[in-house]
Length: 159
Image (cartoon, rainbow, N blue to C red):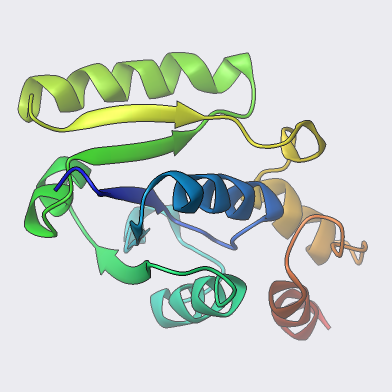
C-alpha cells in the first residue's frame, strides 16, 4: 500500500499541468492510479470514456500507471484500490485553501490515508482545464497547454 498513489481529477481535459504532476508522482511511486472523476455535476465537455481515453493516450510514456473512473469520496476509492497516498497538484496559493480543507476532511474520514502536494513546473502553474476549454472554444491555439491528442480532440469538438 505504501508503494502507490492516487492522482484524481475530472481531467476535462487533461492539461500539461496535470501531466506534469502525474509524471512527478510516477517518479516517486512505482504504481500511480489516475482516478478520473465521473462528476456529472460539473457538466463536462468530454464524456467519461473520452476523458479516460485522453488520459490513457497522454500517459503511455509512463510505467506503473492505472486509469480508473470513480464516483463518490476519493478516500473510499483510494482504500478500494489499496492506496494510502493521494497526490494533489497545487498551481497557486488560491488552490491551497481548498486543497488544505479537503486534505483535512479526508484525514478525518480515513486517517490512514495521507495527502501529499506536488507543484507543477512554473510554466504550467496557471493552466486550468476551464481556461483551456475557453481558449479552444474561442478558436485559440491550445498546443502549449495540452498534449497533442487532447489538442486534436478539442479542435474536433469546436470546429
